[in-house]
Image 1 (cartoon, rainbow, N blue to C red):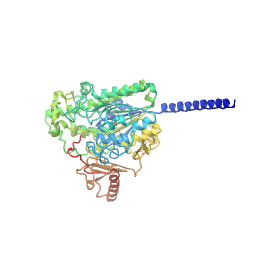
Image 2: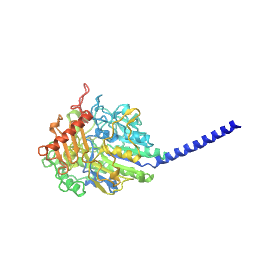
Image 3: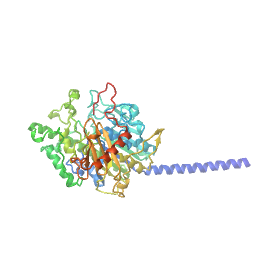
Image 4: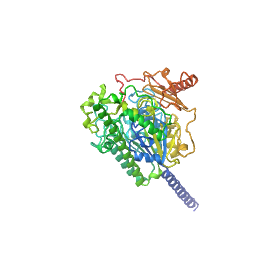
Length: 553
């Protein structure tokens, strides 16, 4: 009898314990389901002055709506090119520490591996472990091998262009004579011929979200669009509404945008335009036929931005229709400044002529390869100096908008310094995740950014104090910022002696070098640079694999 009594008591205890465990598990799941969703939208090579809510002239109704319900960031900083920005974005760390010291180089050297490294954890990796459904569609640009695939870095579902750029209508590579590299869920795939990139990536994201609906899990979506990156291709319905708008030329548009940015409150009223890059040919020196072709380039670009906005609207409408909108933090940004490259007219890319034309009548069509060049990029970067590639403000000061749960500021502008490294800490804080010292046996470098939640909640006017140092280097372009002071170098080969000193509180265009009049500030920032260079193990020039030429993409 005693044995039976003990047995029954044991069974009862196990049943009670099992019930408690079940309740705890159910409670934990309920907590997971309550966590905010995150939608991260990245435009490719979008200029600072393009969006309507920033003072631009392109129709961006849906993106502007996000700004009205949230915060525009006027001093948001990225890397000056695509791959290092994406490495910083997904890791919350420096591009060298993340492995993307130079986006066109793959080596075994620290910082120049050409892929995400085991020194960092990715946003989807940590959010997935915290119970999130994770998916992406669009540009990856963080490694081509199987271990570098988005599927290996925390994405449950992914449709990714692994290369740095792609044709917007086909599988044709716009960087080599072959085909682009596409992957779905870690498996090689081909482009759906004839589908338009921005439309198709949106289709994929909606497809992935629909597949997650029954689970009830919160989601992290990475919409990594390839628009408005060259080649400038888009349906006529989008660009024809801008016909004639840019006939006055790029010099005039740059001036107009300076004033409209002031009117939108994005820049100070006393901001001045810096001179154009030396490669820009004055508009008035062009023939009428050249001006006609140039104006069409900008019409096409505007059409691509217009279509991008349309697809942002599709995503937002899907969230509203499924009831997810009110619990979704939405972040929209550009990965770097406006792009200036024109590869079809570059001596190293003559093969493009075998597949594409830049003829006027075909401009914008699937067989067309058009870039809008440094001339229009100058207007896109107004009021800053230069554009993509450069560590000047024109290459790294880009638009960002945040809207959604926890954003208590409506239609506000945040003017203090922020960077792309701040987003990963923001997402972790939102999801209640503590960034680990290690993961899966990998020792991690600490995050470099800081959570933006205090700003979003209206509880802080700054995220970083005056002593915070933000620095970067890519392909010999280098900068370091501390408080209002910035040192910038754009000379090749890179040498610290070429750093110029600017006071960004008075000189957004980086025109007045103060290193002679502020020697103590200059020396202080140079010491900070030395510390940074040692930390990231900077190599200039970086190592080049034997027999492989450097081609920057």
